[in-house]
Length: 512
Image (cartoon, rainbow, N blue to C red):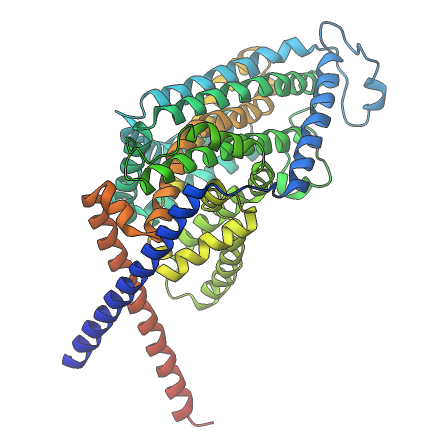
């Protein structure tokens, strides 16, 4: 017993010494980083290929959307293209303006939810995030019941499974929520001290609304062509992972990618500002370079825009998959076969995370590197300093995603209910695509907080004293949580090693 205590004590001491050594190195790296920030090195264009792909996709899809919408605007088959689409569409005599108002409602509700969230950011943001965590499961379950009631069996099952997965995920991370809410509270505090970044989010929301006006115009034209709810309407909402390179003109793919690009552009702008504030010791510091917001905006929409387009394709999907696998992995227990399969998926996703993670955007904002280079540097920084244990424990990104999903579901419900009163056979079609519109608009509001969270972790990994100088109490809480997580991981490693040695010993002693 005494030996185990001494082992635990020595392990804790060695962990503290290692952490102290890492802090010294991180302080040196941070001072070097501050000097490079002050020197403002020239930036090169990165990931230009993906920038070209995104622009070509945007121009090409804009043309197609215009054609699809105009073909049924005020006159059926105005451009005489229905004969080319007879195998895909039923070509009924309906008009674009029949369905366009439903999407206009979706855009209005989504923008109202996003703007409301930004307005309440300083006073009610934490309360709203707590509500989104606990209400989302109930909302999904209610929608599932309504789908069954409306004879939409597939969507009833899908939403029911979603409600169950959401409930299981919240249960699996319930002990992490206090720390998560603390991090989100401090991120809100940081963002609230930078009103200019909130104005940037408003501006990008307006840009997204303009694109959605064109997108919904074309979508309304497709719906007016009478794709039934039974299967062929997947032209609008088909899985983007499968058909990304085959059908660049699939409407939901375009909406998702365009929305992700705008969200991550805001991410880079906000991250650059938050990093500067933390490095220079506060919002009012005289050492902050002039016109920092303008410079960050210029870099985000020029030299770094290709990296943003590239990262926006994969980051969200990989991150969501990682959250789900972590939640399942923590609840498996001793089922060796299932644990082996989940561990294989877990390590595969962890490898992908090294190349596609949201912390890359902070590195892009600060140094202007390519996306993959930035993602690797951020992940190696977390791994070498042990902060990855803290990042893995925090689930602030999942909480913000829940708020985004809830906003999208509310938007889709509003448009779906109105559609049901007019055209009962178009509810799922309009409601699901309206939900995507709401998610993108609410996500543009949520991303300002997520950007602050990622910048806080990068700064803590670079130099913990930056966080201490900004908020000493928060620094102490982060350090204590990090120490607990490192101790927990060390205990798990010792447990695994002891079991491995015991199994080896048993195999050697058992008769053949």
